[in-house]
Image (cartoon, rainbow over all chains, first blue to last red):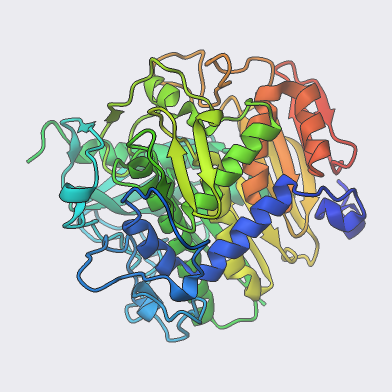
Length: 247
Length: 303
């Protein structure tokens, strides 16, 4: 296999290839830069109250600096991710700064568990310490201004609790620990790699361990057998959590 | 330098971050948490499995211009641009058809989403109108936008931006990757391409630097209703294309690689690779009989 950097697939434009005016690459790059520049705290808040139709808008694209994100009195959806590591990023950021990551250490550091966790223990491996998906609270104005989307929820849901599921790939078993809170998955962590290859404590999937040990590749493009085993383990755990009817 | 690695489940797939860096562990932790946060934001806005997501609320009423957020508008705009460039082979308005084929389970809650949107008037991408100056979107008839490919790519691109200051990093979202810097051997990241017919085997591998790679395959997700159908749909026939087993696209952004691998899958080897070439991207296509087609610049490499 060729390993020289000359053979590396780089950005085609950099290799002196034809530049496409108004091409899709340029369009995607512009989108990425624009969204990243706004910063996700403000992006999330802006999306939360984009629910009213407008017939005419006087101004052009509103620069983020002047956009009213949380005008007083208008409730917004709760952020869908919470982590002490983000600190003040979850509140609307000042107009001028892009999201500056807090350099303070996370306030609650999870110690990775190296042995099998009993089902009753909350999982601490493999997940960002306390990256918890907060249950979303519907905004109070929803009933008045948002037209019903007419989504019919099925009778099934998930019971709160911690569930352990197993999945298998050709390389061995994978165990996943899933925590349900408020009827939703708040974490799905790999809690064990039960294969004949050693699994590092930083949760490499067995298939990728095999690939790296053989020296062939660093990653695999295309959904892999191991990620399917992981999904199988999560599905297995969720099957245990599933209820026949909502409580 | 140390290797840091974290995984989490997002967008119904396994997300893995890898960073090889001198940065202190707290900085890596914070960067990776921020990168993961982008997946949550994008999913919350773009998911068709959540009736309360911005995209589902935005398309709830036909004929009315609705202001879209600064994230959703460029996502829809890009999806429509890919639709136009591919002559409709890629079309984000297939959402209702996908739902009918059983790709309708909100994986986080296990609830089945059934949207009361009429499917008697078949929509196309031409039924979605944009006003860039006002940042509004108008749907001309009831429809569901499936932004999966574009949204996942955008999340990957935003996440890798968060990790780029760490110098060497990879964002892997279920086999769609963006890479920066070099691997532990100081060389371009080596990416294997999954063999479309042999489980666990690789059919090719490529060295990758400062780019994104996406592979779409007919082996990924089967419809729970019809085993002959998978999750890739030709919007023009409403059936899964049968002439392609796997498409791999390399592009500067995951957003482009993800959407174009889907478009090229539907277009087939000849038209698919031609589209990639006109857009200055590289591609590799295998048919079900494992005939190989590739753009001129696609890196060669045996697994």
